[in-house]
Image (cartoon, rainbow, N blue to C red; front, top):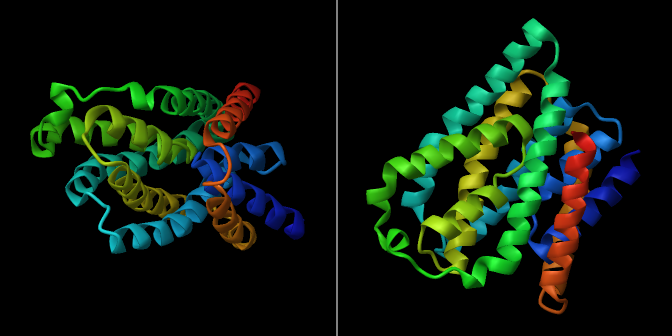
Length: 254
């Protein structure tokens, strides 16, 4: 089983490096389809994501491609909201014993949303023109930014999915950022968010640390290899295929 998980981590890391499509949207449903309980799949994925996002954040911090003001406003909303989501999930399980069903169905709907978001980013991103709202300084959109963080943070705490894809779409549509800054800001905020949610899931016993270790052993070389080859292969068709796979996974979980 360990060797199989390492190979799976390698393949997922490779596809993430190649296409930029979020790892959680690929990993969590695969873990569930392999028979791992939804709560363990979500908690494990959050801890795994936290470690991978840490390395990405350090690299972008060195490159000075992180908008720290935007990260701060998003985190003010997203971190308490994600913690609240995990708490509510645990409370529901205590009273109704339906934690696994809630996670599974919520994950299905979020995966469909992520797949549609990925398709939108793939085909429509370059067609978006700067509007007056995007040109406003970030401090004038502080309340909206915190609200977006709170809504999407709750989704991430519940399902582990969306820390990259959903926040990235919001940033594309609402803020005027250069592509490297958008990516760096997205990764830095995602690191804070998934770390907070991961700690909460770990506290209620929803993390399989051996599984995290095996996934990392495969995914780190996979991401490096995928990133190396990404400039040599067409990105749009690959992203489209990945989005369709995520879409199918979403429908299977509902």
